[in-house]
Image (tube, rainbow, N blue to C red):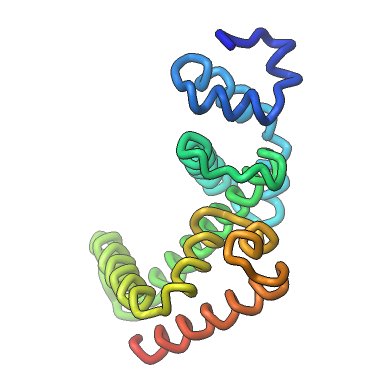
Length: 196
């Protein structure tokens, strides 16, 4: 597989995509460029689903492709779904992250205004709050049981679906994964509430 012409890219298979990402170089770049255009419909679907503005959605879209590239190059894609489905799950996670970031920034701006912090110092204030929250979150995650850590990592960061994780973790079904994830998140929320 030395390269693809435009017609071949239109009909590219998941196996060809995987080989292109694992081979790297210009082939990988042309396939990545094709996917970014081919999945544009997913961009608008995610943008509308999460109510993001164009800039935030574009950041999520770019981050999702970086994560997809990393997953495919590291051979972490399990072929339990199509690459487009796998990408969309990653993209949805990145959209949710953007939404949370936006809400946090809004809440911090309101707090900064309430504390009467000058506008020029607000960026430093936001960064300090974000860093402190992130450090606290890391400490709280470290205290979770290994299975909870793995479950949250694979679902929230790597973007595995509940059914994919059920197979990976040897659980009964997707419902079992969701209930365990819920319990792990509840533990994290309780710890967060106690610490904050």
